[in-house]
Length: 167
Image (cartoon, rainbow, N blue to C red; front, side):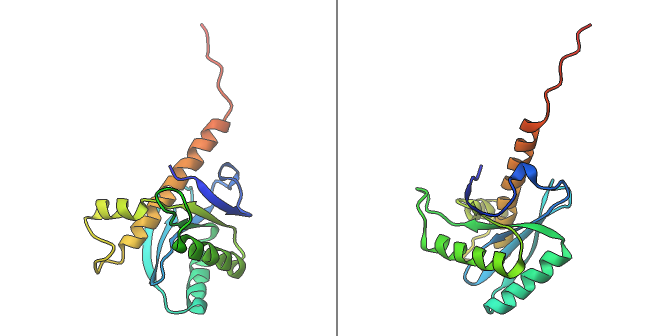
């Protein structure tokens, strides 16, 4: 399960409102893969990829999407090396995450996304280097799915334990 690599003002997963919309972004220089949670935070759904044009346009499209889907938290995948070291792309993703937080005024959390693209390729039978750019959104959905599973686990651990009924 992915663990947070950095959090910027985001609520702890167990503290998020039950009906929080969460947007996950698989950051890339050419495309942004997108996935969104349902309003109950149970499932992750892919959205069409944003083909990047320029920063202003990218932020405008993300802002519109966040408003439309009532997003309260944004996850940005941080592509670390398998060893856990920061990669050049991870540094770019961190700068992008800062820009998103500043421009959209929403909490943004960087999340370890190691192997999400590989898993997306295995699930779809497609390669990220092929013509199918939707694989980026599948990778974002995997990132979001892992986050939602972590949230559920944390919430369960905070529930009061029922006492057994003895007859």
